[in-house]
Length: 308
Image (tube, rainbow, N blue to C red; front, side, top):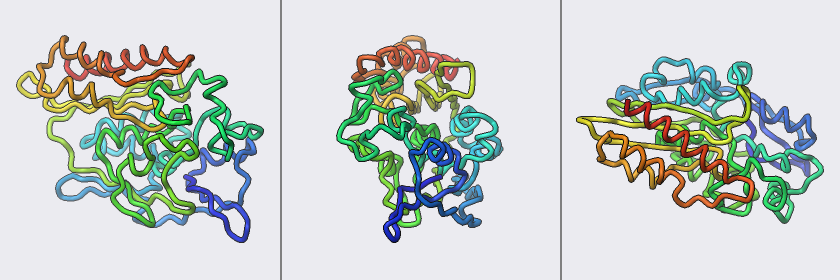
């Protein structure tokens, strides 16, 4: 995990937890500052569940632990599935949930130490006028790189709240912004660190799935990913949540698609409406229109499996 860079005595300092993202940035030369390891505390390394089932996950809990905790799998199956589908087993054992939320852009212009993009104090988004093959289809701001956090999409689907060492009860939107500020990956202040994730009580009768579209068989960043939650009762959809990653500068709820399903019969016709509305408001770039089909395909597949 790395919080926004601090300046102390005129020198840049970054904070580190698992360090999977930070280590890569330092190898490439994008990050060069001094490091301070985040000191673990019991509150930051544990998973606790209250009497009503609501979970509190410390920011230093690893992705692997979230994927394999039976309490998380039972109460928040979409979160557990997303954690289990992220990166590789080796990375999941080291990477933390706080770090996944606070990681930096995967855009190749940002990762190139010789390119001054918006996120490195440049004046333009290099990808917008350059190679943006892996860019957004919901164009929300000056930067066209998708937000890299799978866990943010999953937590968005569950209306999770985030605490830091300075602020409490932040929504995912408050933590990551709305995409309008292309210079940052999140709204953390310099030196501010995520301390825990708070999840609401589990939803009775929930079904949830996660799926990503990738450009190779495994160990790849998603082109598009979906966390889908549904509650079906008496043949009708009582709840539908669709959170998408890889499609915008921040994770998005597919609100139009969710609205199309509210109270509707769990039928093929409803699935078709949800699929059609899943791209409502999309504005693909010159090279990213293919993601519209990927998004619709993932939504269709997950809806069919959820309603089977």
